Image 1 (cartoon, rainbow, N blue to C red):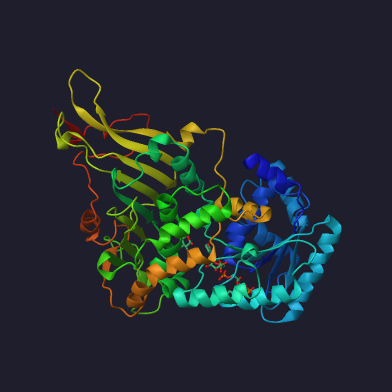
Image 2: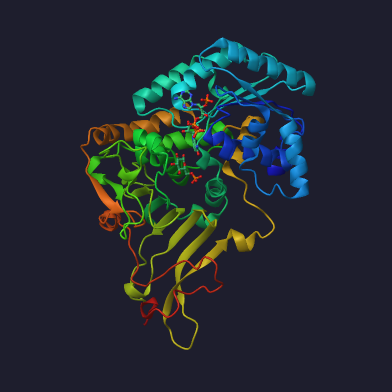
Length: 513
Ligand code: NDP
Ligand code: BG6
């Protein structure tokens, strides 16, 4: 599939206009992703990148910004490709609310189209949401081609709540058709998130147990080790629920929970996702746990409020856990618990599907761990199934172990592409299944808006947790409330080791029959 897709894109000359080219996202993600596609021949060698923003930047400085986050530039082959990529990159400085700048951009677009014979255009708004509409308007008025297809990429966040998101959607809909709008949620471009549909719908073993009769609860966890360091101004306006849970984690939830789509067509997939969202009632305050990080226990790492970019006394949540219920025949009674936080003890994103207990009979409950299917999104992409096995030896002792597919050891000669590479390639190809449709967005906001308004009014308590901890103390009780069970056997997934047994030397790791 990928080979066909990249071959199609590789033959297709398309200029990319990157609005907000002076910004953080452009520098860290968009330019490196575009270069990754260019270097690996996934997009046409004639691809032209035109940056646009208000800052006046001279050419050497602009080229430095483009290259700053590109890796392996000391390799002569990479360096040669980069030189070519830079040669084909240009920059236009202009305002976001006046036609003159967009007219210059149009001039540059026409120039490169003449050179390359390109007809379609990719217009990427790597900008703060406050300027989405003026920029989309300026682009429509001045840079909308009638010769080919216009594709407009919009970054998150798409609004602050249901009402503001609808205002944004309505304003965009007045300018562009839905099939021209590509709302990015970069989690949809992550390898393991894209893998969910394949795991679910091409393996009989999962198809047959993916429901309330077999599954006790589902947990989707996002943990970051760093705090908001320097991004506090942006973050404080949104908070962790809007920044991560309502979009990234909810996209994962809908892929885990949706019914089988009628086909792999973008509309069929997105219809299936919207259907499952419709079956989810609004999240309620008593099923939400919020936290904000304080200083680390040893006092060396700063609290959220120590960040100079955070308003004094802010009550904004940097940690949230919430439970969601899906009222349909497949999932009724199975809680989906979403957890996300900054300044925690670990860096990881994972999906944990915990199966129901095995009935007792031959074996006692304490000798059988619950089965858990874990999809490790990042880092160290993996899928593993926790299960009870016989401990090798003369006895009949049980041990918790796993069937393990670790990408690093299984796919040694393949690399996992960056999420933005995946999504930009999809947008160039006009493939919309990994972009968020407006009704999907509407449903997600419907579910979150009432509780978000209570959070905004300070009506939901925010517990403090130490920087570098597992989150607020109440988190263990919170997830236990929704049926998550930690087995008594001490167990940790052996991320690098070849051993497939529970932690060595731990007396609790082996249960005797
Ligand atoms: P920046 O704050 O770096 O803004 C991008 C550019 O927009 C700036 O270089 C600036 O360009 C212009 N700009 C900034 N503030 C304003 C303003 N108030 N009014 C008008 N123009 C402004 O943002 P990011 O690059 O970090 O993010 C861009 C978009 O991508 C946002 O929607 C963000 O939520 C999203 N995003 C960012 C991620 C990241 O890692 N940075 C990750 C995921 C999503 P100039 O002044 O030169 O015009
Ligand atoms: C962004 C959020 O959308 O996703 C950030 O704004 C968060 O706060 C980031 O850190 C996480 O993305 P990734 O790809 O690093 O997991």
